[in-house]
Length: 119
Image (cartoon, rainbow, N blue to C red):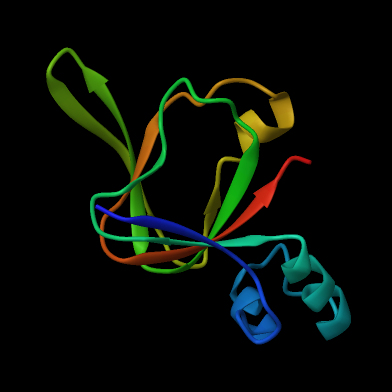
């Protein structure tokens, strides 16, 4: 299982990739380019943990491609809370409330994410 984080270089992410997110669709090309400069590209292989329960909620993730699932463990049994496809985001609640993560988030397949830190 592999989780790779990369600083974004010009050309690493196309601003048009962010247009599929309704919350970002109304921004100008220049605004999107500036937003990308504040982000970190995260590439997760299938089965990689992106978020672990009880970790600090210090970032939000936008799924550029692939998909993830949020899950909790109840005893020895895994309970899937939701599947989150590309074009969606997650992690905002704990980031804005500055609370610990309440679930694990795991890549279902090879997934590219854009991570924005609370900083």
